[in-house]
Length: 612
Ligand code: SF4
Image (tube, rainbow, N blue to C red; front, side, top):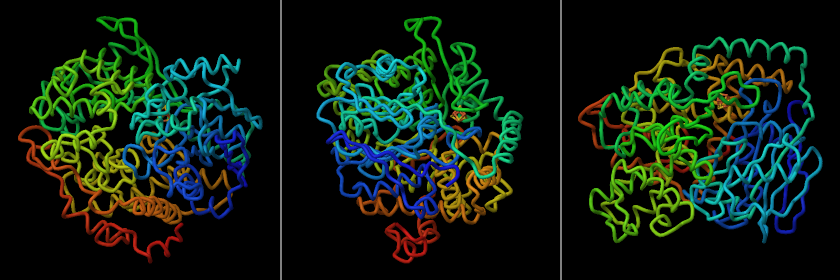
């Protein structure tokens, strides 16, 4: 098979053995790779029967057909398991080089089964696989562990994915970081790796993966690089990172303020956190994933104040928003420091910022007090308290032990009033975009299989001016119109699932490589002849497979509800008076999906899509 390795490495940590799986061709045809094959193999390897924090929960890393080839924006990888945070389908993706190296080592994926008694790390070097003792690195933060593992192997060419102390302590939103700051952040997969006692996975490979039409593929690479370089978004993302349009996001009312309760904030404070200000204040360099000319990653160094001299990776937009306006902080030095600390400890910055901001609101409203918080006054904007809480979450100390279980469980602990204030879907904390600002977030957050998520259905692209003529959208959609959204969200979710099965970075859509370009490249690489309709059907199958898995875990319409707080209109700002139209959209969306009125995938839909 071209563009694939046709091989997946399966490591059994119970008895420290490994074998190679050759998935049936039918799996590749139906689910491609990446996010799609992840879900199919999750079923085969006992995911439906496993509880989230048991060693039987399979942790599956997957790359795609374009990963590791000479093609831009295709260097990412996916990971999945049953989520410890939501208890439903859990998934995340990361950039860097790790995925490309796994592909070049000769594998389309890596499945971790069972769990080790003692800490270990895994070394994959082309065909050589080794499971090594990791007691010397257990207890180290993610970055130090990465460094020590590389030293131990004695070869800097390896990419290493690691967990920090948060994963070891089973913080429910623990992350898996790789390549010095790229992260599988959401849904707590770092805790699954911690349960398995795997501290790190080092990969290196130097094999070329053959493609169907080598000459045309090479030509396409140079054309694609030119297109990406010419795209206006490339320049902006390279200069200022994902935080480039901070001010514009605020103007739309898309940026959450004071834990989703304010419509406006001092514009000077917003400007202090914008991409250009951040570039001026702390940027030390830019960082790219494998073969990516965009290089949206940031390298920072703090030049003044209490964190002077600290350097690291980031912060991205989500981190700036979560440790900034969400908790009423306007200090970019502090935000860079807090984000770096989260990366080192190995916790998701979105969930961490959210649960701390939620605690600030509970404290302000006297739902919790000092008796609950180990004597700490958790007030809006208190930076020292935030740093202390990050540490307490990581080590599950005192009140931090409750925060480490996420917003949903924290709210359940403090009763009905707290539950009305908690902002999550399916237990996953909202990313830093407000459904009051873009109506498409309503369904995207409600129905995303991993819970409130801004990446698997970045549906608001179409409300911000991007068009998708290949799937019938040659004009942008009005951001407050809800009638057009059920179909648009469904179609975008389907096509994104297909693109995620190839493991393309979502920024290709802004970066001069529209859907048709990527699909043609896929056909050149594989020798297949998929059309846009085929791609939509495959994406629809993958999306429904995950919904079917979630149905089995107990997800129905009750888990598709948006939090009450988001239905409170804001009196000022970019969303003034507007609230999401959930009720008006959800049943039409279910109808288009072929689900019943409880949100269960109908038998005829499963049959039509040939699931599983
Ligand atoms: S755009 Fe950013 S995240 Fe995407 S591949 Fe390039 S550097 Fe990585």
